[in-house]
Image: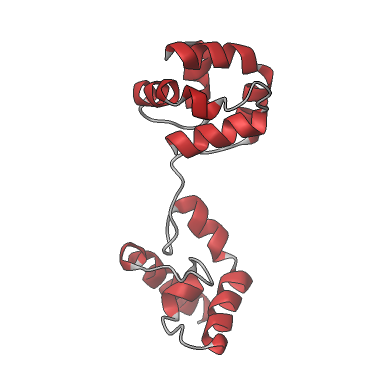
Length: 148
């Protein structure tokens, strides 16, 4: 019986994801989906507790359900390692708007439109490499901000 109730709750949450609004205090997740009253601290605590105990917020963020927005870019360890290992080449190719490193980075970030990705990076080169000593994390954050 519990599995049926949990399944019904999950289906209801997923089916209403497109209509959902996210509470700015508790974020997205099943708690925000099934408890719409956020007028008191008790109700907010129930939303947060539901999100936390069921672990559905992580699923929502990665899948774009339960009122969560799915990130366009998939930042991952492989992309970070690639950027760290190819900083100079990547910088040169972003400056000219194309190249194997830019294409590989697009693939590692799961970008669908690689040409638009390369153009956006080229147009925002100065924002990506905001200083001479830009490190991997800064470059990857700036790429994510611009292309994400």
